[in-house]
Amino acid sequence: MSGDFDRTDALLADIRDLVRRAEFIVRRGRESFVYPADPGDPAARSRRIEGRAIVVEAQAAVHELPTAFRDRYPLVAWEKLRFLADYLAAAGTARVDADVDYGLVWEALAVDLPRLVSQLGIR
Image (cartoon, rainbow, N blue to C red; front, side, top):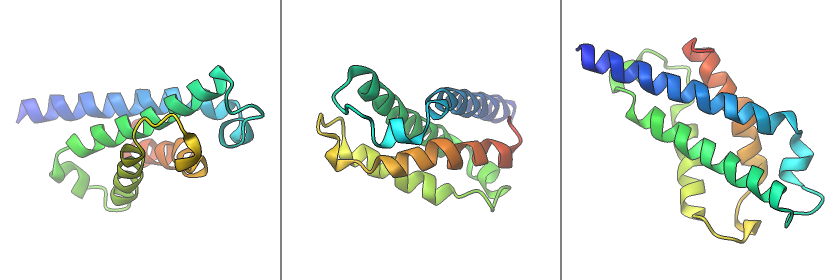
């Protein structure tokens, strides 16, 4: 049982750290992420790639949490997180951003992931 506890703690720490990374993107503002002035600008592209990666990595950590742990938090939108990560994974690493709704990614970075850490008490 100690191994599950240690693994759960490590996963929660990973989620918390991913949300901290998301905060750096969020601080720059929604418009610069969803509608950058120059979508081809390397910095804008890097933020978008990083944002997508954060959402996918956070979901991977959430997916590895023991079911018994997730069951203790019925108000967490586990399925919404899974859906968004699946959507982004399906979009792949395509160089064309037109296939990705960055409004959804932004919502995950700015709202869903911070809510998750708050609901789990891991801030």
